[in-house]
Length: 146
Image (cartoon, rainbow, N blue to C red; front, side, top):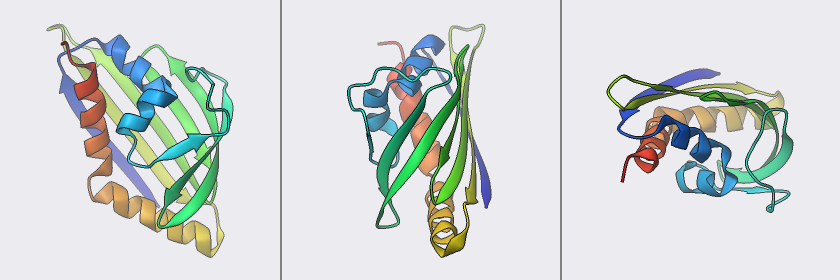
């Protein structure tokens, strides 16, 4: 349904950004949607991980299978499959002035059926209302030098 991009700069350690992105406990502080993992004791996300999460969107409790394609070298790429399919990529790069740049790309598509179309529309509405921009700013702020 939609493609979304957000970018921000920050004064901090780019490595810290990837730590924030791959730690499920930290993700709860910046994710626009509350979620739970099937295995709450799991550690950091790694390349090749497959997991199951549940959350609430559009007033409905939804489940997703998550596949992590990359969680290293300044990138987190994953796909969430449920009533909608959400492709997510975060990229962080260092800049010469001891700052960094964080970019997020999200693609949302319906997995089919009425529920898929409704949830995809609700997800797009959430992103259009600024949820991705707010999320990227929260992640960058958490990585700032203290």
